[in-house]
Image (tube, rainbow, N blue to C red; front, side, top):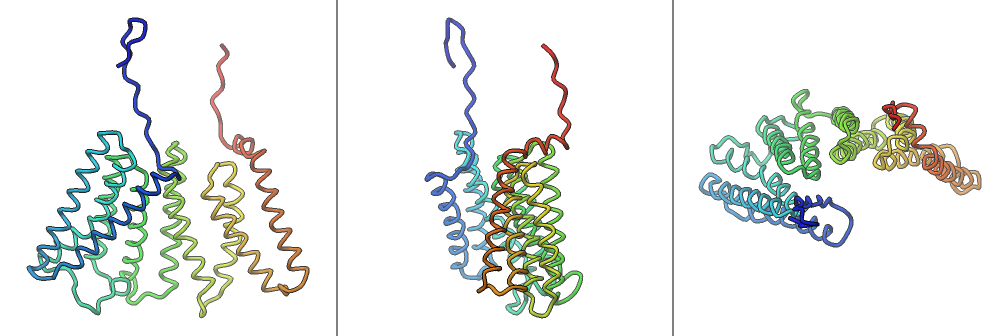
Length: 318
């Protein structure tokens, strides 16, 4: 409480400390990843005796400990460490679920079982449950990084689901699923942006485009396929994404757009020109210049372009 001129003012609310690139955040995030790897390394050292009982007890202990630490830190306004502790609890949940399934002897322990080639409802269920736990943790903490964990698990779950359609799925099947799930995630991010939830939408854009990009790259690299099935969509979509990135003020769109466009154009230049001759070098220079000028135009006119598509409420006269 603050006393000013005889008037007691309410306490100033604590500013939420978001993650940023500085030494404390680097150490917090790296330490969190290190603890996550350490938890699973410790669980792997526990023998499989007692039907997975001790693995389950260990996993539950870490899950509860991370959740409690998260609650304590968040109450003390340690937003980033508290959020990372919640993310560690989410990351530990698969060990809890697998330990429980091993305890009731339903988890597939066949050493020759390959979950990416043979569908398993238990593997798929653990992935979905982990994603659900992550979304609940985000709802409780409002720490956006947890959304990244949950969306990453959703992408993995989608690949675990592919064998449900066809046993021993091909690379094209996996690529199609990656493109579909990536598009769905990006669209969800666009809706979040439309409602002003830009921090939450960040992870939808980053990981949605990552999944779609991985699918297109597979089409370009598959030795038995048609490379243009990947390069042509990459060229068109990257150009569209790059044009839209400025008006919507999304750096993630710009990163994926410029990388995809540059890679596709250079691919076709290499395909049709000799990289050791001056026309190739001159066109490469021109490509860089075009991207540079596009950045200048986006900086100068991006807001005006966006204003053509966004209706702003009229300003009331004083």
